[in-house]
Length: 104
Image (cartoon, rainbow, N blue to C red; front, top):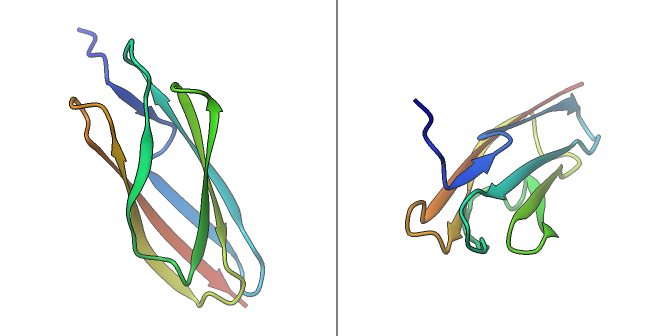
């Protein structure tokens, strides 16, 4: 049986691993799978002092990339979320879980 999902995420978990003081980058792709344009916007983000993110619209109304970059000297480890609001009633919110660990 095949179940069509309204929104496909390349990953629901972003894991940043590196040396303390170094910036680490990760990208997650968000793809609208329905026959209507997808719009996303930030709803909640609780790692503002640990991580920067940017939403890039790669294919208008269809594909977005979320670029995450750790802030140098963000600490040893952290975890949090980025919650996005969508215009799809079938999937009104997307939650991406974020973890980071930095060592000497």
